[in-house]
Amino acid sequence: MPAKVKSVEEYLKELGDAKRDKPAQIKEALQIYIDLWKKTVEKGVVQLTDDIETALTKIDTQGGLYLAADE
Image (cartoon, rainbow, N blue to C red; front, side, top):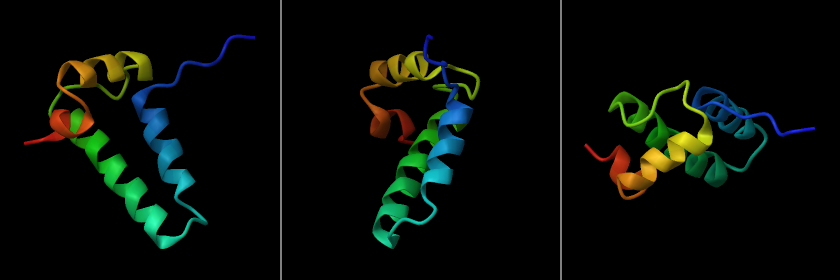
């Protein structure tokens, strides 16, 4: 059975759900990571409907997540 391809939107939801029942430091780190992803969406680097592989390729062409999210 092939693995289900996740969209950026599904990935961000799963990350948000993963914060539950985690220590405060991990919650904070996950939130920073989620916020970086959201900034790439806001800037139009990736779309919520992009599959993760496509999104990561787009982010890579920008020099990585931090640079892709930079204003």
